[in-house]
Image: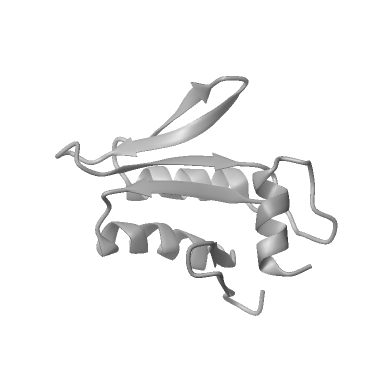
Amino acid sequence: MDPESIYQELLNERGLVPGLNDIPLDTFLDALVASFPGASREANGAGEWLTWVSPSQRAGFEVTWSGQHLRADCRGMSGGDMNRIVNVAIGLGCPLYDPQAGERVAFDGH
């Protein structure tokens, strides 16, 4: 399955995508909280999300997830802040997919 199709399946919340590995979710979320002081897990309807707002209140993100993916919706963030999210993924060997660019970036042979 190509990266765009996987993204769409996960976005549509149709359950697990066959052949896609689980991610180390708690480790990933803990690393984001450590990288973004003030980030917190909060209730979001029937589920939860991780949210962060910059000290200036001009930037932030919401992170949602399943066992196979993590999605970060970012607003007003600098390249440095975005790279902090990327660095967490790299550190855990998790491949990234940028739907705006249509590109998948893999690390550590994934």
